[in-house]
Length: 347
Image (cartoon, rainbow, N blue to C red; front, side):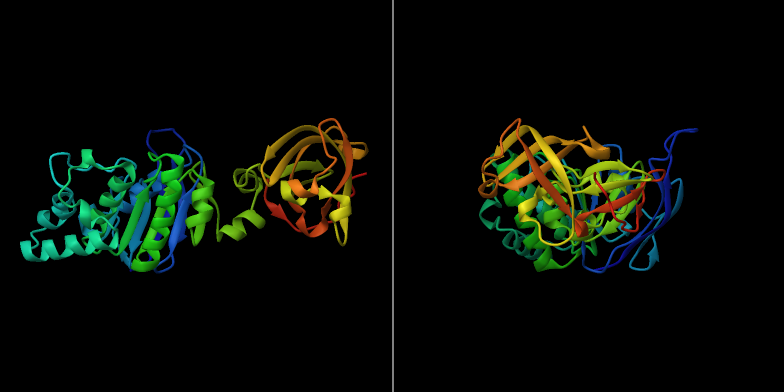
């Protein structure tokens, strides 16, 4: 296991262009599962590739285990990487695919066989060792790629959207398997994804990126409940956080925090909410509507409520809703940064 650190790590692809990664400072914890989360073009894969040694930084340094590795090739960094495409050799068996990096490093045959069987058993693919990649499902290929990565016992795992080619059902099971695998092995892992559900479910911490900048690093609970700025607030969550401008600030609240007034206990900001669209999601309903009256008249907001508690609420109806004061977040209108709580008067 090892700590990965970046110091002012920067990548600019063309002269005069904006940086794909801009002076990123971050540090993993030993043995943690850190997720890089962001939209397409946020710089998350470029950042991972610089850590791996597959992309040369324009400026800054990469450290692994306290050692500066910025100018070292990938094979000298003690890392293993799994990509979106598993890049298995189609003419080789599963066993020979897993053994390939060991053979390339001159590991004796007996030791290779021992490591291949260890990795295969760990990932539950011991019965597949004689098959070719074309005979495997997408989930099985993903496990083979992981086995090939771990067989060298790297100090750091780097995974670049390894589940994105799987269907929804396979992604869910593979996500669970990866999480359990990390708990067993305990190797420091950095995982890139644009999928917030994946990030929230798997990460010990999440680094949220936008335009090459790390907006916030924190636990899933921290980045969801205490967003550092309006980008993090709206990128995480489905539906995203409601943002309404209020005098010199922007007030934010999660859809699940906008609930019928009768359900609220304690201080709250009350509002008249007219429902214009209702989406049924089984145990929950998504209510899309507008505020009626007061300073925020006509502002679109979204509520997420339990189906069992939303009887009588239908499209075109208006109801008294409220947001508990402790659920309100406030952001500076000029910078979008989170600021101290304050009292919000809706009406």
